[in-house]
Amino acid sequence: MTAASPSLADVLRPVKHVLLDFDGPICSVFAGLPAPEVARRLCSGLIAAGEQAPPGAEAEADPLALLRLIADARPDLAAAADGALATLETEAVRLGRPTLGGESVLRACFQTGRSISVVSNNAGKAIETYLADHGLSGFVAGVYGRTPGDPSSMKPNPRLLMQAMESAGAKPEECIFIGDAARDVEAGDAAGVATIGYANKPGKDLRLAAAGAVVIVTSMQAVADALA
Ligand SMILES: [Mg+2]
Image 1: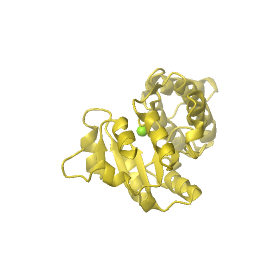
Image 2: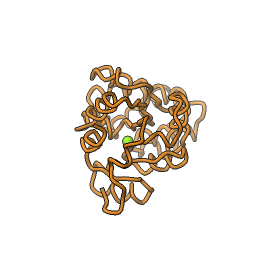
Image 3: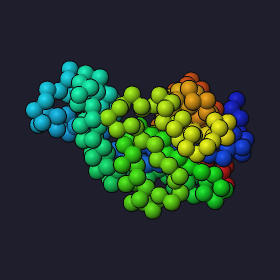
Image 4: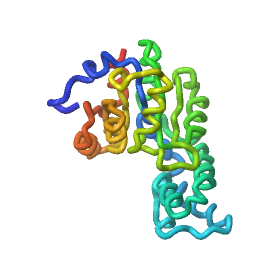
């Protein structure tokens, strides 16, 4: 937390609905099956299907950026590429590493009567698989992964956040979003909801603060403690 920011407890006190990013706050999706390997497999799957990889695709190591690149260059391949990536992400989460304190946040929300929606650029199928595998599905009211075949739905687009709030019947001022990337803060901003920045790597605190995060935390356990 930075000295000038409001306290975490102050920010969380009025919150009825917690919107939670997945990769970072809940787990590290690509801890076991690394992102560059997932990108490589996505690309080689495309080529194996007889397609030509769009320019730059083979050098792109971020699977979600690769999906965007493919969909931009070849809209006709967007749905198939998204499906293939969703399958790879589902494989990845089985090898993913739970974030310390992430599960505690889910439990603290549940215990204090706050609903949780997971809002993520990852595939809903992969998120649901992770939650089920870890016995956490019951803590989550809704999962809002990217719209299949439509990478433009991904944050910083606020669309998924707005869907989550609408389904929860929640006003933005009753919500908080917790994410670990500047695009999360930007999406929160566009949706009218304040964002807590989870700085899980050196340097992220500055990027999250610059993007306008209301508070920065370096541990999800701190969020769980403040909720409880
Ligand atoms: Mg994230």
